[in-house]
Image (cartoon, rainbow, N blue to C red; front, side, top):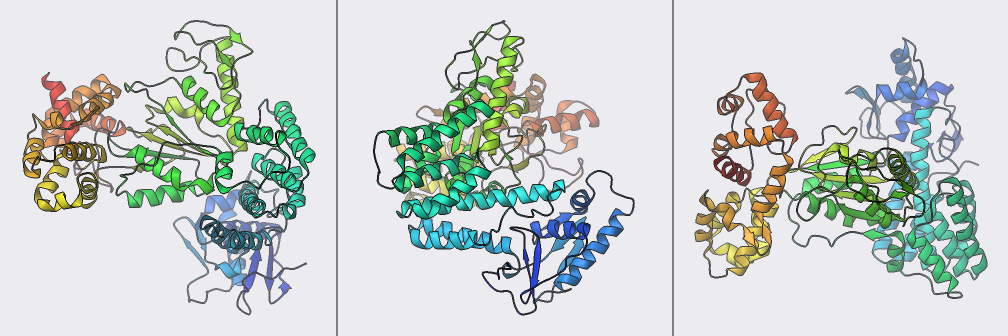
Length: 639
């Protein structure tokens, strides 16, 4: 049966469907889409609408193993056929398919493609749910699901590239189905979701959120024995297939069902708890970073981005940005959002095994372990250990040898299996280096990880990077005003600007200065600005209770290699005078051009030196070091 689009396309326009077999309809008639390779090209372009699709991606979709020498010419023929099908131009007169930047971009409207209409309805439904309008939410989500006619692109999945796009679309449909089912359950209409959930669980037996919704719908329909059986079947399946247990949230739901009969439907708060969240409170004084936050939210909302690195010098607000995004993305990660600090309070790095153990406890991953012993010693593996217990690290931060190595690998494998089955957001905060986190990053599945680090973590690929620097003057003043009050800020705006600039306009340092001023209500802003302007006193002035900027600088200093510390001490003088060029670095370091370039780039990689945002030759670039790091480096050099 040909279902017309939910929002009909204009007369004579083509309406494409991907949420099922690839089809095209014009005025109620199915259109022929040509030979298989032509359909593969069309499906790949439609799966990434209004986005450039690289030629290599199209080539891999059509010829995954051995493309012919004429592949590019053949692609041009297939793209021309797509143009003919769509019409050469849209209603706005723009070309439908444009070639450029190494790929093709297909322009198409929501009323012409079911996946765009699906996404629009799903967003509107979720927005209604957030407003508390559950009836509207259920209706809109159901309208979106009515566009889903079976496994997406099921006639072309023998192409690996198309199969990946199809799996991404199906995962999106499953998430919307879960949203709809949970909304119906909350409305007290659980019975309408029972049969559909059963069918989807049979097709996706390891998807826990579907199981939880099915349990709840059965329970709310008065079928308690069947609801309990769903849990028991899932527990046995996980143990048999993967050696895992259901999440703590699902186990808690099971225990609650055991202890009561037909219960009231779960509240929205109860649903959030069931999905699991272990985040510190959102930073109350978060200020600025609007573009960076928008970029981070967009990346984490994309199914194609699994790892994002947020880097910047100490105090640049990396953790605050990551947590702000994590708090705003609750609906996008139904299996939980978790935050783990990678360092101890004294700034030293934890072992990867300790972090893996904490992740296991938070996410309910049952991992094997060995007895924790000093690095380098040999221990025997134990079989009966608490869930999430840590595996000790070896001398280089890696796993022990022998039985301990086997247990460590098994723990890492258990973590990867969990990531592959769940859509969760993991924030690993203050990562010291790439080697620390390689084994913790998802190799497959829909989970995402945000890494915050002072260095660039250049050895990780493929990842997306967001680099933080100083706040703009206006943002820094806004932050200071939140801490000391806008009225006091207005008493001497010139002195306030001197304060934030003397602090390097970093969120940490401006925040510490603001907290100090909030206590010292009698202190004129101009006098405090003078204190901070004195290089010999600035770090002494940036202390508020147990928060010391100097101690934070010391932690970052220890992360640098001995060679980088020596170089930074020598570069601190010219850097403090407004930055330094490569010639200035050669003079300060007393070395030739090649050695100076390597040293400066090593400091950039470590996050101690910032470089221009645009492309520029090494000789023309002006390099900078945060002011307070310059002061700390000079202290160490002179000491």
